[in-house]
Image: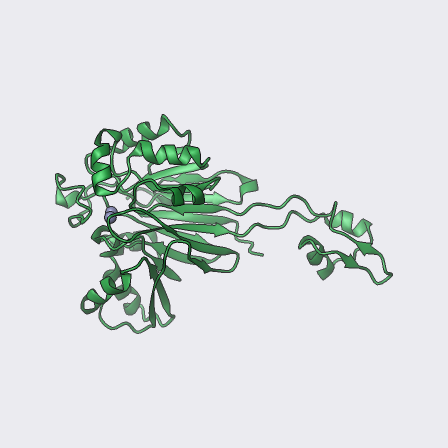
Length: 336
Ligand SMILES: [Zn+2]
Ligand SMILES: [Zn+2]
């Protein structure tokens, strides 16, 4: 069992920072915006149980990853192949090549991701480490120790996935004093009881876990929508989750545009979150025409715990029994 008590998520590209040069977006939703300030960047960095996983690599990814202090990486997940989610990959891979990485790296994404990465091949160049690219459909799972990553089929203009990080449930707390009083010697038998097994002591006494082990402690779940219309698959996976990171490209006054471009409004994201009883809703991928304050206000009219993170903000999720998710501005660093 991991003794690592936190899952953390750093927002590398939130859609809410200003003034960072970037390139135009292929999502066609920021055509009226200043291309030097395209706020549709979207990337997050997940840390859990000693693993480091990136979801999407926005064009400014390399600079953001340096600021965030990303040193190691176990996998990269893509939601889809639009430029504002993928163009940071060459810079990221070159950085690891310069650091003489040798460990294999796996990249997962929806149908079509292999072709997109092949097209970037001449930009990326030869890597000194094995690179595996795996296409997945909604419902697929990547198993890690104590966690799994689930691909969720979503509704965008190209093949797209949302992602869920789902922690295994943990057994309840074990009452060592009670076990001792029942004659159980300290040692591996305690572990067997905590896992729900019945044991037999040397003298033949049978001990069951009832009364010695507390309630199962439910694992944490983070769900990330990627670019999408609100959809049933996301709703189903988000039920009772600790944190839903949902795109909110538009205010509801631009609902028609959201439908046309296969994006969501803040109201729609909040309605999905409220129906799914999500504990915290983080809204990202805001268009230039959607001020963060208005996006937040629109969602807060429907869901009581809404955050609109800025770049490099960090969300920390303690074990459920230790409290709720917390947004830490700029990841606790001094503002720079
Ligand atoms: Zn897109
Ligand atoms: Zn996008």
